[in-house]
Image (cartoon, rainbow, N blue to C red; front, top):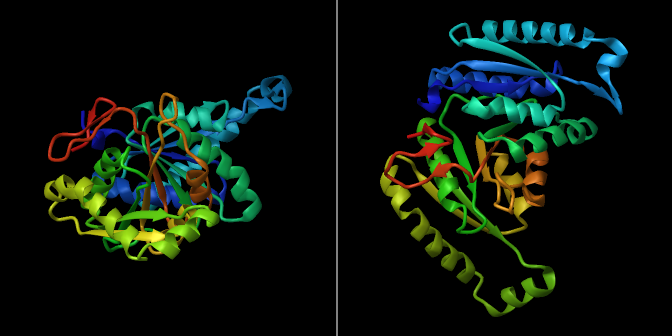
Length: 304
């Protein structure tokens, strides 16, 4: 089964925070010919008390009504896109992660206000950490662009590069976008000063670029139509990635392998999810056979 036949999931909660995620999913669905499934999670606990003990199943009907309204909005936005709905009960992050076991991608919103962004951001980070499919976290006010734009892939080290490149090159090709491979480095100040005072300022970037070209060679060959730019900056990773997000259409991160089944997000990834100005796509290192020029398989489904 092609991944393109799997639905694109969108977590909706009735707030404006999900608006950008809905727009992003609909734009992608129209381009790929995929369906959209709207998922809403009804809380099942109030503090330590089950919700049913307080109000029975009354919350379910309100959640179902929310989904009906959301589906009508998507249908008005894109009549050509098939829309499904799914109502779940429980914790938001765990239920959304479970819902996307058989999905191509999950889209979740991120509120732009400081206070609400922290609260809703926790759910987005939670699902981005555990979901088996890629998760795209979208700012509430994000709007899709007509032109191909720019896909930025954040590369920290060689491990995980294959998974990142497999996903990022495919995204760039699909959207006729330029691919920016971004690597940022900065040592703690007491050590960074030694590097800057003793080494030609261009030398770290030159050596890093040479190493990146070795990693990129086969991917460039497999995706000859994708324009690639190497961007090496002497900056804290969070600052560099948030700055790059201001002109990017998509930022791609990979969860790092950390003894857990599907990896985890470090402090940098969490901070970027909260501060990026473009959609951030988080992929799992598990279940992806990344071999340039060959068919890619992700969780049993063909990707390319």
